[in-house]
Image (cartoon, rainbow, N blue to C red):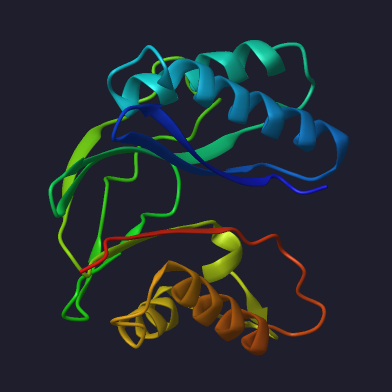
Length: 207
């Protein structure tokens, strides 16, 4: 039982939430914290208007959940609120210590989205920020856990540069195709002994 999770759910008409996260460790304790993270995000997203506030709520929930544990557990997460406006998509992103999502523009250029923010469950007053992104027709945003970039072949990591190269080569692909290209690249790269969890979530704006 690993700690990677992702989610996509409606919060209102033409409004959606997208989330991805990674809980420290494995086993029953990690699975319990993963369940807490998913539930808290879904519940808080229904009444909080900013993703940063949702992740702040999750931060407090994790600290309460783990306050009696000998070894505190932590979580990283990216949460986005997505609204459609004709052919454009407006996205507000907040990052709690997670890998920065990548935007694949229609012309093949790659951009990092969201400031890193602070690890969830580590500090009572974690600094978490909202960043605004506009996705145009043909653009995609790619959320991923560290199992993608940290995948290893002996002492070599897959790394951010390889990920961005795969994404740039995926120009014009839809969301399932982008996920498959990244997954295939990571699986073919990593050694058989590498077994870290990996999660991907892609939103693509059709032309």
